[in-house]
Length: 271
Image (cartoon, rainbow, N blue to C red; front, side, top):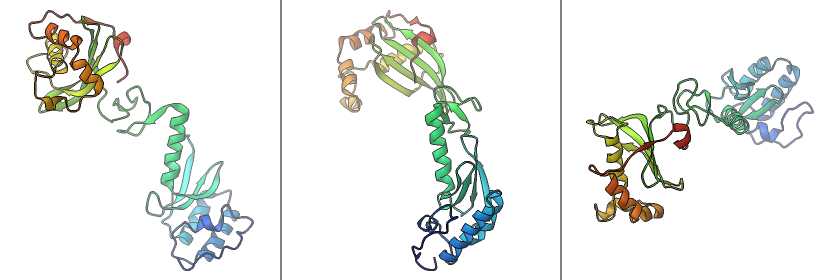
C-alpha cells in the first residue's frame, strides 16, 4: 500500500467508506484507487459486472467471477486470488460492498440452513434435509458416507431395544454394522458403527445379534479392567446391573432369549 489513508470524507456517491475500502490489499495509490473506484461504481450502477471489471485493475484484481448463492441470488466479485481476501462484491438488492467471496457465500449458506433446516451434502454439495439421505447422491449429508441401511430393530426379553444397520463401510474386508442399545425407558446405553460380525453369519441374523450383545453386556471381571476405562457413569451402572447380567445369560450362544422384531417406524430412533 502506497501510504496511510488520510481519513478524509468519502465522496457522496461512495457505496462504502475509506476505512472499509482500505481493507482491500492493493498495489496502487490507495486514495487514487478509492476515488477511481467510487466514480466507476457510481457511473455504472446499472451494469455491475462491467463496473467491477473496470475496478479490477484499480484494486490489483484478476477479473470478475460469479457464484450462485443459497438463496438463489448471484454474487459478483473481483477475484483477488484467495477465498477470504477482501474484495469488491455485488449482490442484487444489496448493491456494491467490500467483503470476501468466501464470507458472503458461507453466510448465505448459514442463513439458508437457519430458515429451511436443510444442509449442504458434505459429499456432493447439494442441499438436503439433514435427517434424510441426500436426494442427489443418496449419501448421508452430514458425513458423506453411504446412507445407513436398516438391518434389525428388536425388543429383548428385558424390555431393552436393539437396533442395527449396515453402515456401508468395510474394515478388514468385513461389514461394519452400526448399533444402538436402549434401555426400557428409551435411554441410549450404547451406540456405535464399528461392530464386525462373523463372516459365517448374515449381518441381520439372530446369531449376529447375540454376538453383538455379548460385546455390549461385558461386565467387570469378564475382561481386563482397562476395557471399561472409557465407559460413562451410566454405562458402568448398566454393566454392574442385574439387567446386564440377565441379558448376558439369556442371549449367550446357548441362551433362550428371544428377539421380537418391531416395525422400523415404531422402533427406530434417530441415528
